[in-house]
Amino acid sequence: VNDFAGLVNAISLHLGFNNIADIEPGAFNGLSLLKQLHINHNSLETLKEDMFNGLENLEFLQADNNFITVIEASAFSKLNRLKVLILNDNAIEYLPPNIFRFVPLTHLDLRGNQLQTLPYVGFLEHIGRILDLQLEDNKW
Picture 1 (tube, helix red, strand yellow):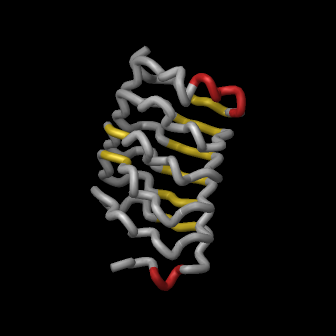
Picture 2 (tube, rainbow, N blue to C red):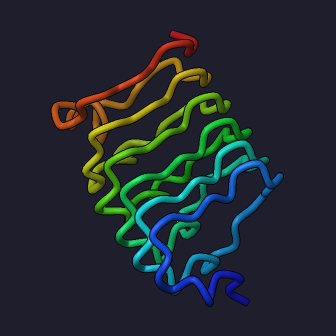
């Protein structure tokens, strides 16, 4: 069941502060016009590979202040218009290689996580296009 079926013209969706622990595959089907998604201040632990299916026009994703420890390798692979990704204040320890390979990010916020290293492949090799990169308060 798609809880957002009546929101086909929505361009922004605020789901923050709802204690959401998981987002089912297909939850956002039909929201192809959505440009901004706010899932901050919830209880998410994993960003799964099919979590953002149906959001091919998404430009802004805010997922800060969750409990995210795992980001699956292809979690963002279909978000090829995503420019702003906010993941600060989670518990991310590791970014898979090529995590942002086809994602045209200009702003990335990874402050306040548990990162110790960053992969060259798919991250550092593409860092030239990122205008605003925030990495403070990690385990460097």
